[in-house]
Image 1: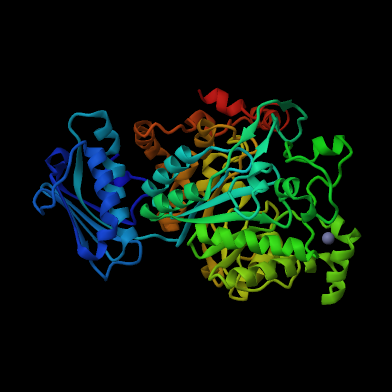
Image 2: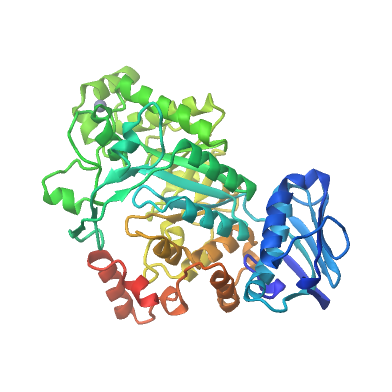
Amino acid sequence: MDIDKIIPLPQQCELGQGRLELAALENLAVADALKSAEGLIRAQLEGDLGKKLGDGKERAVVIEHDKSVPAEGYKLTIGADGVKIAASDRRGAIYGVQTLRMASLAQLKKGGNASVACARIEDSPRFEWRGLEIDEARHFFGEKEIKKVLDLMCLHKLNVLHWHLTDDQGWRVEIKKYPLLTEIGGKRDKSQINGWQNREVNDIPVVGWYTQEQIKDIVAYAAQRGIDIVPEIDMPAHLAAAMAAYPWLGCRELDRPVAWYFGGSIPMSMGIKDWNRSACVGSPRTMQFIRDVIDEIVEMFPFGYFHIGGDEVPMEEWKKCPKCNAAMKEHGFTDYKQLHTHFINEVGKYVATKGRKLIGWNEILHGGNLANDVLVQYWTPQPDPRVAKHLNKGGKAIISKHKHFYFDMPYAQYPLRNTYKFTPYFGGINKDNVGGVIGVEGECWAEWIDSPAKLEFQMNPRLAALSEVAWLKSDKRCYKTFEARLDDYFKVLDALDVNYAKPEIFRAPKNPFKRGATIRAWYAKDMNIEFDRNK
Ligand SMILES: [Zn+2]
């Protein structure tokens, strides 16, 4: 790609005279203050160039420490005889190198002569939270794919992986005190297929989880790439896999397997109305379980946040439960939503003792009694005025609005331009409170994503659009020129062997009837309709 057309686009790029022949590069020199970035940078450049680099400063990539450069930013100077990068921190140094890589990777991997135009770039991010969520509870992709995603995130200057490790359909992280969580909760023998409105079931087992050693290895791999990982352990609902392992977590002990359906139509047809019931928040034993799980989770994930989920919480069980009703009485609550928020606050207090802050989906605001330091993740398709209220009180939020950032949805419903044209100004978020929006995050829910190839298809090129929304100032964004840059960008993805949706898919059919037919098919009979067309 041309250096002035890379993704995400730099804030400022001035082209100079001449070009740098990459074959001329022989050295890498990294300032002492940024030495912790050298291992990654050396491995990436040597891998791209196909040769070892020395330590000299001639014909070199020279990385200097400059305290005047903004956090995560960099100044990059490409001359005919070498490259200079100035950064004040580790991520800035890494990102300067990613800019060079984005511009050269496709040519280098093809072999032959590769060059980049001489240029001066000054760059730094718009948002501090530039996230991507991967759901490994519904389907399990494994270590190799997660590392591939982390490599891709680094190249796109994204800095948070939100890892959804537990849900009704699977528990994917080893907890030593409760081994049945993975032994029972980490397996299911079949899955609902072909859309929420469909009742078809396959007979393919989904089995897998990460040991604590594997998690620590992946966390270190991410950290090396400037990426923090926030684990999501969804509760008090979305906990059916744990309840399959330990039925006493619920208000009633029921003998139920790990959920193999993704929505209500199948369990409702079997007469199970409480298929997504919550854990018993009035039970001291359940609360102790949650503290025990958190104790082990924070040991694996050093990042300063713990994602509690906290969304889609049915309260019918609580209304019939003596323990939950005793808790209601004890606190003088009149609405079970207050009990929900009380639970969130209790977990928040506990994770605070471990030096962590809580993140939860915006439903957790509904009790009106949520602690203000909880980071709210705004996802719901319906506008939620409580998010603006939370921001007005000085609270913070990440935006993952459904129609912009739900990457698991069909392109016919949410074409690529939806992601690119995101603006945080909606539902009461305005120039006075937008400062509380610390970033954006793309979501890859995996009910209907059953393979790495499909994960990459749903995610790309939405990830490119996300990275530009997260990085580039909004007045510099233009969808038309972004789309024009994608042809060259796809050569980068090809070089990295990454799957992606082609223009005829990500643009969505213009004809509304055709578009509607694809969406209907996706929900009711064939959620591979776009994936298969893309091949
Ligand atoms: Zn209960």
